[in-house]
Length: 404
Ligand SMILES: *Cc1c(COP(=O)(O)O)cnc(C)c1O
Image (cartoon, rainbow, N blue to C red; front, side, top):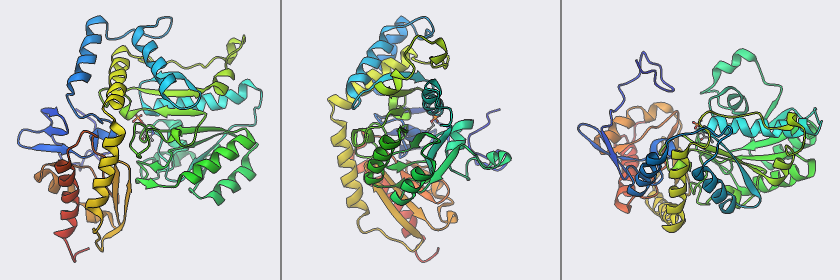
């Protein structure tokens, strides 16, 4: 018996059963669907990509897995070299893991231990954002701020080690003036908060955060598990404002398999690098640096560069703006767009009930949640396909005009 994610099993509707997938399309027994959300924002090159398949198959002929404890291999060496060269600044030190949540846990552990290694033992707190989402493991639930997901944490009462602020400069300055001596890090989803409702904010907030982190010696962590690889219209938000630790996941492998990486800068790495064994980073996911995952990631990055994905993303952003320009509806609170992400926020979650089936019948797979109807399409989508995704969203509101 499968226990499905985020579902009340007693009342959940039957999921669509997928029998094949290729390009932007998912196939069920009776329908062909454009995947408008790229399998939780990860499948940026589409499904069954010949070159990505080939990369996995070639590695499979060598070996599918060996651990990184006491062993190493070419795919992981090549990938860490590539990331070192490709990521901005001195984000050069790659710690691999098997999922975004774990990679965020690793980043938080790094930040805490960085100060413990320096015997600054008062720095136990993390500054994070309201409506932040960083995963479903215990520490990531605690730094996240999403009551709709993580009510189980109420069992523990309010956390003493995490402060949540809204994305205003005023709140940021206040938090630093009050807590700077106790903070080891500030953790954010930069520019675009995904699971908290596709909320968007300005880079001026991040620039100010960088200044304050520098002034008070606090490590800045970007969780780019969702925003990385072009989703915001920037290759990485870290290209605009440089964090001390960068977390990548989801699209890292082109959505081919679960893998993630926590990338530290030179300063953070130096905080662990000495003769004391107790200053080592004590972490080691069983499948970290998996050779299949590294091989497919290398190929995914190669496609991203060679086929100029940033211009594809630019085109998606432009088309989305064009198609949504004259859209409005009394049930809609706000339409938000950034890069290859669009979100229609409604006033009442009831407004979106039935949308998934409506879209299914029109050949689009979508998964609205709470008050948010959104699309985060694979970057290889054609213009007509993107227009169809957006038209389906608009039609839903048109056909229920007047009603709220
Ligand atoms: C999805 C997500 C995570 C968690 O990644 P998993 O691979 O599901 O553990 C963490 N942070 C952000 C911003 C995410 O969108």
